[in-house]
Length: 254
Image (cartoon, rainbow, N blue to C red; front, side):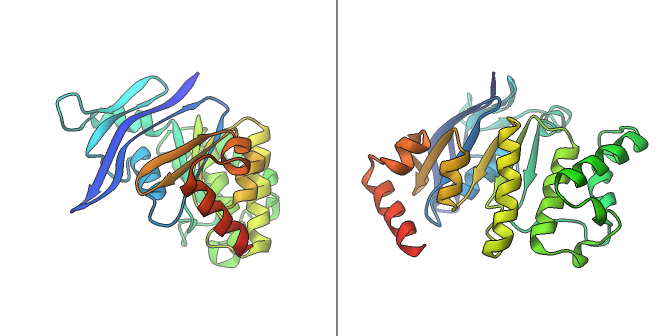
C-alpha cells in the first residue's frame, strides 16, 4: 500500500529555488533514506512533507488522502480538520530532540496521546512504559531532559513519536547532534524499527547506516532527485557523476 505520494513539489525562499519539481512515493513498511550534500534541499523536502513549510506547487497524498494539490496553478491545502487528521498519520523526530524541558520523560511521551488524541491515561501510561523498555530507558521515566545524554534524549523523542501510533516516521538527521558513540545507540534503535517493518523516511548523512537499513536510497543535489534506487545501486554502484563525487568525498572523510 502506498502511504505517501508526493508529486512535482517546488519550493523557493525569496529568489532561491530550493526544491525543483521533485516527486517521491513511499510504500508501507518501506525504509527510504535521503542523502545529499549540505544545501541539496533534503531537509527542506522533509519539512514540506511534514507541513512545516508550505510548498509553492505540487501535490501530496497521505494514505490515499489528499493534503494539498496545485491543480489551479497554486497550492491548495486541505482544511484544518483534515490536515490535523492527516498529521496523525506520521511522526517526526528532529535532530535536536525538541523535548519539553519542563516535562518529565513520562509526561513528554504521554502528553500528546492524552491531550491531542484524547486516549485513556492509564492505557497510555502502560504503552509509555513499554516504549521506554524498548528504548532501553525503563529506569528514566521520572527524569527530566537535562538529566539525560543526547542519545537518551533522542531515544525519548523517538518513543514520543511512536506513542502517537503513526503509520510512518520522518527523521531529520537524527544523529547529527550526537557524538559517534551516541550515534550508534540511535542507529541501533532505527535498525530495530526497520526490522519491525516501520515505514520510515530518513534524512541522513550516515552512508553505512543508509546502506544497511534502507529499502531505497534517494540522492538529492541542488533541489533535484539525482538518483534513486536500492542501496546496492545508489551507494555501491552509483551511475550519476554527482553521486559518485559525493560518496567518494564522504568515504574520504571517514
